Amino acid sequence: MKKIAILCNYELLPERVGGMDYFFWAFDVKCKENGIAIDWFFPNYSAHGEYSNLNIINTECQNTEIFFVKYCERNDENYSFIITHFVELCTPVFKRISKLSEAKIIAVDHNPRPLGGYPLKKKILKKIKGLLYSKYINLFVGVSEYTTNEILKDFGKHLKSKAQTIYNGVVIDDIVMREHRSCSNPTFLVVSHLRESKGIQDLIDAVALMSATIKAKISIDIYGDGPYKATLIERIRSKNVVTNFNLKGSISNLKAVFHNYDYMLQPSHMECFSLSILESLAANVPVITTAVGGNTEVITDGVNGYILQPKNIETLKNMIQSIYLGEKKIQINTRSLIENSFSLKKMVENHWELIRE
Image 1 (tube, rainbow, N blue to C red):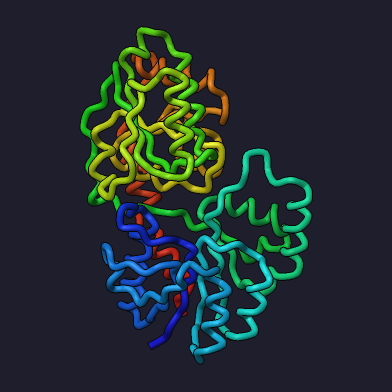
Image 2 (cartoon, rainbow, N blue to C red):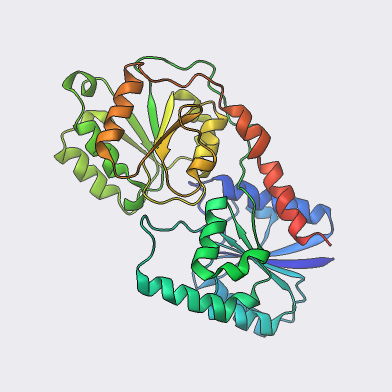
C-alpha cells in the first residue's frame, strides 16, 4: 500500500467541528478506497467524530514541520506525497524535508493576509524565502483565487506554473435549509472565531449607532469562542448594547443552527476562504460580509448577500438597518451555488487528483 503524510497545524477540538474536519475524514476514506494510507500529523490527538479512523501521529503541540523532520530522521518511511495544511510556506524546513524524502511536496495555503498587506520588511523577507525555498515545494494550492494570487505576490510570479486553486467545500446533505426568509424584522447570526481580525467590534459599534427604535428590537446571536471574547463583552457593555448581542459560545451542531436565522453577518478585516459563508449559503441564509479574501468569489452583491468595505461602520449600520426594515432583501435560494460549485465531494475529488498517479 502506498503511503502519504499530511502535516496539519490544526488543533482537533470536539467542541469545534467544521468544514476542514469533514474534509480530513472524507479524504482519508477516499485514499484508503484507492489503496493509499495516510499518516496524519496533528498537534494533538482526538477520537471525536471520525478521527478514530485516522492514523494520527500526535506532535504534542510542537512545531508540526520540525516534528516531522525529526520523525523522518528516526523512521524510514517511504512517502510518495507530503501535503501541508495551515503551515507557513517557503521556510527552510521544506529544504530539510526534501533531503530526507523523495516525496513530492504539496503546500496548501489557508492563511489570510492582513488588510492593507504586509509591512515592507516582511514583503522583502517573503520574496527572499520564495527565491531560496520555493524550489523544494512541487505544488502550491490556494483555497481561493485570492489566495493563489497572494502566493504569487508573496513569493514571486515565477511560481505561477506550479500554483493552482482548489476551492474549499462543505458537506451540504446534513445542513438544514431555511424555507422562508422574513422580509421585515429578520434574525441575524455571526459564526466566527473571536479574534480582532474578524471585525465583530465593528458590528457592535454599528448597532450602537442605530436608531433607538431598531436598537430596542434587533438581536444578534454570536457563535464562537476565542481570545478576543472578553474584549468584545466589555465593548458590548460600554456601548450599552447588552440586550442586542447573545454570545452562544462554540457548539458542535452549527449545521443545525443556520436555518433558524434570516441573515449571517461577517464583518471580517481579513479572510482566506470562509467555510462558514459556504455553510450559511447552503442553509439558504444570505451573508452580509466584507470585500476581503475570497469573499467576493462566493458572494455576489445584491444576489446572494451583500458586500461592504471592511471597517466602514456607518455603511454596516445602514445596511443592517435597511435589511431589518425590509428595504433591502435577498430573494433567491442561495443553496444551489454551493451544491454546484463548493461541495465537499468536489473538494475531495480535486485534492485526490493531485496525488492520483
